[in-house]
Length: 220
Image 1: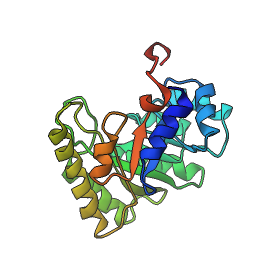
Image 2: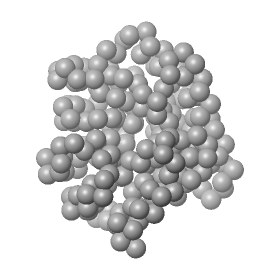
Image 3: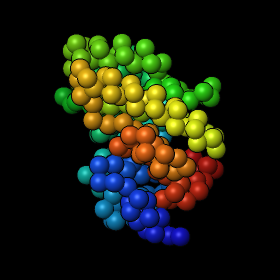
Image 4: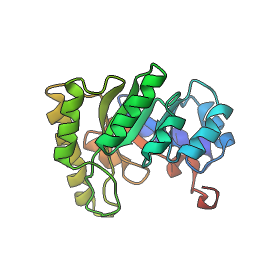
């Protein structure tokens, strides 16, 4: 199917309350523009260098989300324009985002990335670390960031019960934290598992290959 057909198929599956982040990593500006022209305004990139190369070539009302692991020394390159950083996995990184956002008199939205997968390769905060960091935010420690929600990635497996169990961990944490300071965004689910994620309470999904086709990693 074409990109347009893929995009429309995904959109038709989504409830009104679920945000689609179109993950455009490794895909050309022309493909991003095509999806933008279909009405999509939220795009996700994994790497800072790729994002900073694409950003000036595309419409300035795109809401860019950084969804990949972010090194503290790269924050300065995106702080002026990034809408949301979904991959905050340490207090050190949150402090750096806060510092760089202040230079532009901005408030940058962030999601705390929580480690819910049993795979060893995934980044993310442990549950208790996320609770402590969120409480520091609530107490006013980070004036130039807004923690708007949580993000997590389930184990890459065909075991649906395993995936559901991991998504439920994140949904439970989301509900727990929201009792004191309501959160808006629960980002779970990608091309292979987003229907399960939505069923488990996700209101934001990150979909790339199901829209753009297989990624050309030789270009990444």
